[in-house]
Amino acid sequence: MSPSRLDASLPDAPADGFSAKLAADSKAAVIDDFQANSVTTSEVVSSLIKNGGCIIRNILDAGTLATIESDVRPWIPKDQPWTGEFFPPETRRVMGLVEKSKIFTDSIPGNKLYRDVCDELLTSWHESYHGQKLMKSESKPQLNNTIVFSIAPGAKRQELHRDDMNIHNKLEALSSHEDYKMGRDCTIGFFIAGKKTTKANGATRFIPRSHLWATSQPPMEELARHAELNPGDGFMMLASAYHGGSENSTIDQERLIYCCFMAKGFLRQEENQYLANSLESVKRYTPEMQKMIGYSVSSPFLGWVDLEDPRKLIMTEEELKLEAGKDLY
Image (cartoon, rainbow, N blue to C red):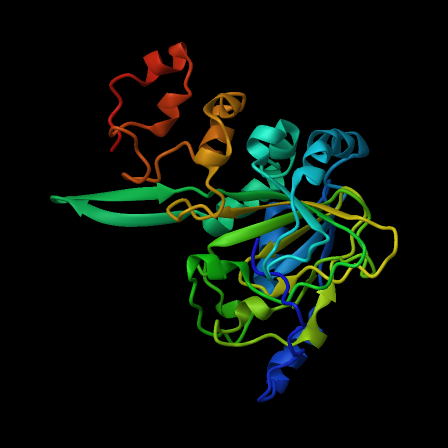
């Protein structure tokens, strides 16, 4: 979720020109198109490191999509048009999906492939001394946001942007994906098509290999590719890649997209999960999902409540007995 539209479209290229080398590298990229039932975590990780984004077909079946839509459809007309410059007035949004749709949360942020990819790319480790004892701390990824986008005909394009601007992620240019190091990216997005998404109805466009560029490098529109998806297909993307929703030039097609981002566990979440969703709604989830939503401590001491694991606020009596006396450190 980032700035998406100005009243007038911005220029398609930097005024002072664009690097021929960067343009050629982006144009040479072949975007991977995987099948969810056969792709491996390592293949997706390698694809993201190389190109910044990839398509994964058949992630969700028709029944799951129908249930998600039945949960979120009543909320779509309750959203009001954005009055500023961020979103076209034809866009409607639904947020706080942890509470509004358990099946959305279990099926999209909780998707095993997505979570495994995020664990590989976003888990952080830190070593520090406690006296003469070297302590190693682990911070697992957490849910950054949940959003449904319903984009009606007539919506103008989003300007190309990077979602890692939210966490002020300043990057230096890399000469090749072979120079990429784990930890460069702080957030990863996952977009699932609720309906068929095409170039005409506003499919997300992104610039391949722009995740290798410096933060100071502006985008060039002609390098963007469209992630066209059938219902249930997904597009996974590093937040450092330039991307944006496209113009919906149809007269009768809604673009319906279900999306979420995950972030490093020590960062502030873009969507405040603790105010967006009630404690009672979070209690419906498994302990692992509760931790992913943000009810956990980023080791060693980030996120506690009264120097205790915040998940104790939603634990059952049996769980509380098992956790009694455990050292937070």
